[in-house]
Image (cartoon, rainbow, N blue to C red; front, side, top):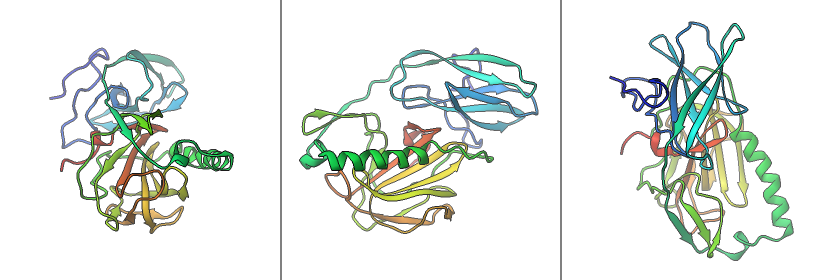
Length: 271
């Protein structure tokens, strides 16, 4: 049974494991799963200016929405555009969630980069953002992710971070403890949309799984795939390393919905 939530009885609080939909957890950095239409024809659903993922299940269309960490608690809304062009709005509530702080010590250049490093950072940011915001309109049957690497999963997503006691953006992924050289695999099929050695992220792979569902793998010691390559679930992407802004070897694993970082723990299979 699917319990009703705050969206006029349409916001799901859980999706049974046998179904494609993830659990709904509409907190900042979380995922809202919202029933939007019962018609056969697929609607167009927007969250702000961005399209949302749509999954059809048991004759009903559901929007799967990534909620930014910066989104205020309280009312939010979707715009639903039916096949005939008519529009309506659906409201739901973003629920409170408090994230902890994390304090790390790294090389000074990763906290106070010089101008040449800043130029590199901005150039790389454009490449990374383009890959994370890609929306490939293909059918997605599930958002469940297998573990990309074995190891202890840190609950560090959303932590407010301080590097050398200076505040920086919240942590937008999950750190998974693993030894240098451990193989990192694709948690589900997709297309590699970007690879590179980036200033903060080190050796990085970005994989597009369709409809704005993107995964990110950072600090690799080696990259074993190329851009535009199709990868299958379980296929090696590279090996764990300690490149970029890190304090030691591990995998930074990120999950995104239409450019919005969401907590990977909401999508990963249980350990």
